[in-house]
Length: 249
Image 1 (cartoon, rainbow, N blue to C red):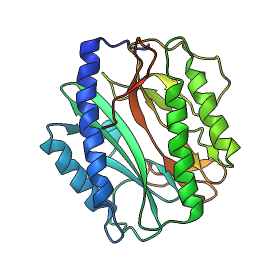
Image 2: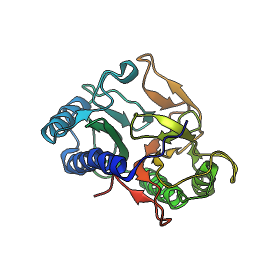
Image 3: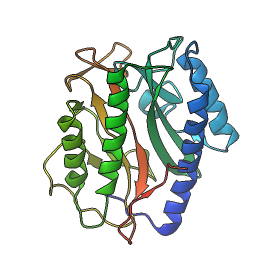
Image 4: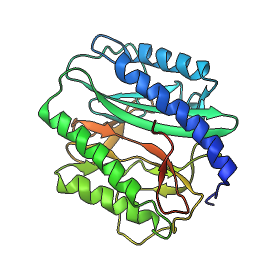
């Protein structure tokens, strides 16, 4: 069931989203070669609590950490560890916050120092795909109208979209209906309505789209060891037809 939020509920979701956005912005200057992903988690967790929020991921379905840190060939759900970043890595940070009963969720992929031209292009195409998808989040469009433009943009640039994981509704729960795949035919799925709040999140591989899960039960990696990038925003569909990005400062 898709939950349509009231204006007051969207304001509360926006509050959690602002913390997400602020912490991710602070992480951009914190991430550097030589630091461990566990140190990044501690930094982010402290910032979330200081701003009055709670890390939404910690304990969710048994997930052991406050944020997800996915490095290079890791697609999503990388668990922070003593892994030390090095020059040329790419790092996806996925962060969710709960405050006053409402959730926000966003993800970015950052370069660690100077990265390869391929990695640079992968990050740009993935972030562009996110905004192209968001532009389709307007009343009376359907969910797959978002999906198809993301897939077309990614594949026309020689990359592949991950099909194992999808975007989702969000707000009162961390994961709500509808699911938002990053692939599919236009004109299918639920019709979009004002008051929907959605997490749109293209996950893009530089090689094939297949993924596998590591023995930790969480970390998804590319099956062919290619690079992967992930960008995500929480948005609200508004009456005026303009999607409102809630996790953008």
